[in-house]
Image 1: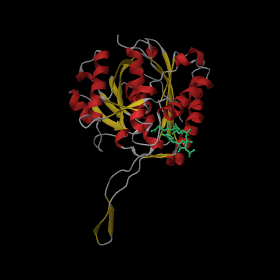
Image 2: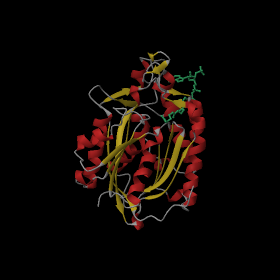
Image 3: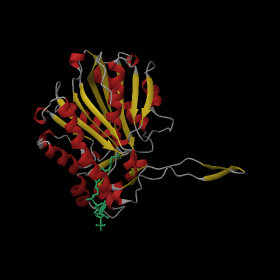
Image 4: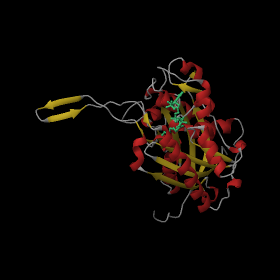
Length: 339
Ligand code: ACO
């Protein structure tokens, strides 16, 4: 990769928000549908329950709620937002849902688009939004991570349906001086050659439109996952990419206040923490309540820890997202909070 240009501006993390569906589905309730048990799910994953979106809820409604909370914490006027970037693989509309969020918020001056990178989506979006702020092209960006994988899991497949839940989280980013930069470093990676261990493939109805013109209409299947391969990928690649970013910025792991990983499996969190000798009390986890909410896990967890006072202004956080693609990334961030 080419040498990074000099940053004109820093990026401050000034507000957070989150929103979850009202329905909670426990492991015991799931056990009434598929052949599983609370003890199997808890031991293998750390998950106790997950939120499942109801018929009256949507990615747009959850994201708007999370975004509004982040904007209020930041103390922004809605018309001052330049960018709304929605990380999701499960929009309400295949053309994207970021503009629907704009309309719901009334943020009429923002440019809005979706970014798809599965469970790495929030980290990829954070870094993408930061580039607009660094160059001075924009001043204020809302980055939202939201997914509704419950709509796309096979609820009869016990190997995958126990893992996922729905939710949304948002972060308000603001251009600041380079000295107060809150995105200290990052690294993003993709490996399409290993992409077939986690997919949500298209299936369609074959149609013959005219003689010799064959066509397949759109539609999607359920999530297909080779759990063991994804697990091996995560416990190998996440420590490597985190170590790369820490070493590049000469930050020893004991200087970190928090480890904030994509919430996929407690065993993955524990394994990464052990690799860096990070004590349990610095490892943020809400898997037991929400399971894997895909692009939402990182901002949802961050907001929870900001709200309950664990994350304080000035705290240094190492974060890593990983998932389908395959895609993965790491970022070192400093939470600033509202002025
Ligand atoms: N309840 C009870 N038994 C189960 C269940 C279940 N829910 N699921 C699988 N089993 C059984 C299997 O059938 C198997 O039985 P068998 O030995 O008789 O064949 C046994 O449990 C062991 O199955 P494994 O697949 O070997 O279990 P493992 O310890 O690997 O745990 C898990 C499975 C939890 C899926 C794990 O591999 C994992 O967490 N992988 C990572 C998945 C992940 O994080 N995916 C999301 C990535 S992010 C994104 O982009 C969306």
